[in-house]
Amino acid sequence: MSLLRTLDRNAERWLLLGFYVMLVATMAIEVLRREIFAYSSIWGEEIVRYAFIYLAWIGAAVAVKERGHIRIDVLMHYVPPRVKALLYIFGDIVMFIVAVIAVYWSFETVHVSWKFGSVSHGLRVSMVWFLMAVPVGFSLMILRLVQSFLRDLRSLRDGTPVYEGDKMFD
Image (cartoon, rainbow, N blue to C red; front, side):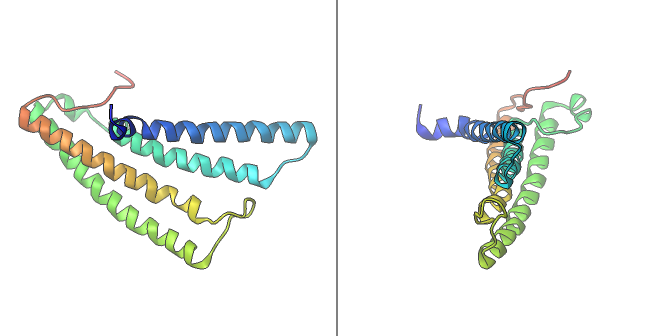
């Protein structure tokens, strides 16, 4: 298996695991410090906060990849496969437009932070690293939307059922 295929299949999973471990380990250390030593740090809270933000944005890209985002799909049960594929393609196009706009505006925020050299209060690290969560998340979403769009076009062309992701509730 090639490196690109492995990254395509697992990159978000590895990132989510890393940020989740960082979040849980930091929270556990901070709870122990607070309860045993009656001392807590501001940097621990910041690590947890920013790890959670990255978790949310990377998780949003995974939801796009797996079609796991919240949607009302009552209509999808009553339309033929071709119409279903067209509806998914339309949804991906709309979401793509929103994501491109969001990337543009979120980079504006990152640029302002870079320009003025803002740093976090506890870690004293450039806020650019934390503000980049939004454009990184939306950029991953754009990548996954393009993949989804191409997959749906193939399904439409071949007449095969469109990928609908795993259902949580049936």
